Structure formats: structure tokens, C-alpha cells
Image (tube, rainbow, N blue to C red):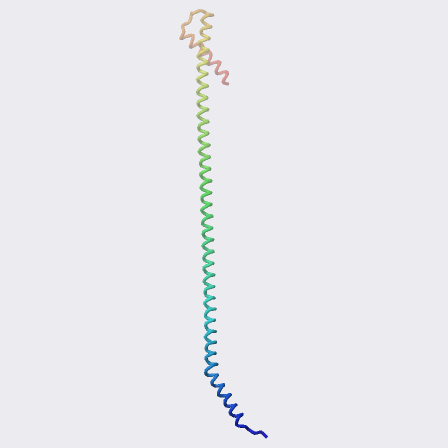
Length: 163
């Protein structure tokens, strides 16, 4: 049969007491340390997640700022190009107008010189014709009548040439 030995009972009691003591003084503090460590790690993970979200928000903000700056710079460049194009067109128009004005003035001046030369030539032709007629006819007509007669003749000849 089974006999119970007091030594086994004492060993069994010692094991239970040792277990209770270890549970109270060793397992409980270790459990607390492990629990605190777990809580600390959880907090660090949450903080890391928050910082990641904040960093992403700042990155998005920075990208939006860069994009806005790029768009503003492109708009300014476009405005500058448009202004330069307008200035160029205005300059070309004013230059063309100035060239046209100078050309017109030159044409008018050339026409005036031409008319002046034609008048001088007619005057000389009248004088030459008067001298030739005086030599041929003699001096029977006075100078003013001869000049008027030759002028009328040249005007008629000029009218037929102009047509």
C-alpha cells in the first residue's frame, strides 16, 4: 500500500511555499516589469505613428508649397514673355510707322524737287524759245507778251503729255 512519508509531504509543502514566495516576490515584479515594458513599447509605437503622420503632412505641405511656387514662377515667366512680345510688336509697329513716315516724306520731297526741276526747265525752255523767236521774228513783241504766249504754248504741250 501506499505509505506516506513525512518527508514527501514536507517537500511538497516546501515546493508550494517556494512557488507562492516566487510568485509573490519574483513572478509578480517580473510581470509588472514586462507589463511596463509592453506599455512603453506601445507608447513609442504610437508616438512613432504620430510622428510619421506629422512628417507625411509636412511633406504634403512642402510639396504643395513647391507646386504653388512653381506655378507662380511659370505664370510670372508667361507674363514676362507676353509683355516682351507686346513690347516687341509695339517696337516693330513704331519702327514700321517711322519707316513709312520717312519714306512718305522722302517721296514728297522727291516730288517737290521734281516739280521744281520741271518748273525750272519750263522757265528755261520759255526763255530759250523767246530768244529763238526774237532772233527769228525780230523784236516786234514785247517781253511780257512773248513770255505769256510761250507759257501758254508750253502749258498746252504739258497738258497733252500729262494725259
